[in-house]
Every structure is written in structure tokens, then in C-alpha cells.
Image (cartoon, rainbow, N blue to C red; front, side):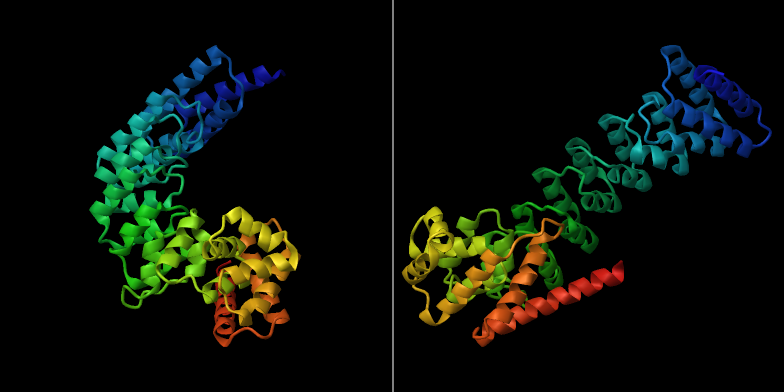
Length: 381
């Protein structure tokens, strides 16, 4: 029997069960088999028309089980016609949810109609999709329920623009679940982080500064205790900043670009911060600073170190840190930066015993905190 004949027989037998099956379960099984065949087999134009007619029968079936079989089996399929996807999206929740959350047949306009229906569960289904366009997100944050907006914020594939972030903050900035979702996003614009600071608790500020870049001046203010109990590690913020020159200049203007913070940056592997800091203090271009640190031998580092006005007693620590940095390599795996930083701290502590007590305590605290994080991750896994 040819493939075409086998496909025709499958369709004929199962359509008979679909139409004349004695139980809902029997018809649902037939619907599943037909939908699998429609989704997987190459169909001619005539066969596609027949398939759509069969799907129409399923979508009108009185049994929820049959309509759900259609929705679940073809929720990711481009072969489900748009008009049927819209029909299923208006069905009961158990049928609508898989279609709304997954079907590529629904357009942005269709999804906006779902959002404007006002049903929280259906809005959540929109917010959970693999991609949610800026257009849909805009309506969702403007008209959606809190739970739907929170879901969209936790979906890193939902495309938020500045206006959408502002609307979400304006409507729900006093709700901890929403602000937590902001903090947990993979990427958060600097201006949004700045606005969040005035809305969230001190504990939440700690998570915000750990996960996201802050404006340099705000980072300095938090580090200086501008808010009660608010603390920030400026070295970690330096590692996150996209504009290192501006960040370093801001530290300098605020009197925070001292030998201690530069040494901490070096000992934790944030060499780019060290380069820019030395360039700022020595008043030379970054490119020249890079050459003096990395390519001019021991005399280059000593020359820029002295020009920067850093204390001679700490030079051996800087020399050791740069040497260790050059000996090490990134391993190319996930969380490469974190592992490199941890290894760098361990090597500095092992090879250089004359660190000032304050810097020694700092590195030990950092290693202890990282160890606790790893233990939590292992326990969660």
C-alpha cells in the first residue's frame, strides 16, 4: 500500500470514528490521530482542504474532550487555520489556554482582542507565549490584570519598550510581586532600575543592584548609605556597567576611586575596571593605559601605577594580581566570568599573603558568599 493510500485509509477510518464514535473518549482519540496526521504528513492542496473540513467538524463537536484534543494536538501547528484558532481561543478555558499561549496562527490583533476580553487566565496565556510583541505588551500592561502583567515581566521573550515599563510601574509599582518581576528580568534598562529604587524595599534593592546595572551616581549614593541599610558593592556594579568610562569618572568625582576599590577590582578579576581606573587617575587615554598594564612589562605597570598616585606599599599586590590574571584563562563555559572571578580570588589569597586586612576580609567574604550561592543552587537542583 502506498503512503498516500495509507494516509487516505487512516483519515477515512478515523473520520468515521470521529463522526460516529459511541463515546466522547473514542471520538477524542480519533481526533488526536487525525490531527497528528494533519500536522506531520505532507498534504496536497486538495488534502489540505479536506483536513480543514475535518478540523471544522472537531471544532463544532459537542464534546469538550474532542475540541480539547484538537486544541492540544495542534496548539503549535501552523496548519491550524486562523479562524479555527480564534474559535478555539473563545472556547472554555481548558481548550482556549493551549491555543492562546502557543498557536502561531493567532495574530497580534487576535491576542489584543484576548487581552481586552478582561479574563485574567486568558491574559496570562498571552503573557506566557514564546514571543510577545511590543504592540501586544503595550496593551497588556495598559489594560491587563496584575497577574498578567507580572507574568509578562517574568517572560524575557516579552518585548518591553520604555513606555511599557513606565506604564507597568505607574499601575503596579506599589505591588511587591510586580516589582520583584522587574528585578528578575534578564535585562533591565538603567533608567528603569533608577525608578525602581524609590519603590522597593531595602532587601529588594540588594537584589536589584546584584542583577542589574545602576546609574553611576545612584550606585555611589547607595554605596554611601543614602538610603537606610542600603549597601552596594561598587566593584560588582563596575563589572555590570556598559559605560565603564562614565562609571569610573563618577567614582572619581565622588572621591570613591581610591586604591582599595581598584585593588578589589583586580583581585576579583575585573581587569577592565582596573584599566579604566588607572587611566582616569593617571589622566591618560584608556588604550595607552591598557598597553602599560598588559604589554609594557613590569616597568609599564609601575609607571602608570606611580603616575596614578597610588601608594607604594600596595604595588606588590597589584603586580601579583596582574601576573595571576595573565596566567589564567576563561574556560568558555556558562557563568565563565563568575568562575574566573572565584579562581582569581583564590589564587590571590594563595600566592600573596601580604594583603591589607581590610582587602583580605573583603575577598574572604566574597568567596563565602559565592560558596553559599553554589550550595543553594546545588540544593535547588
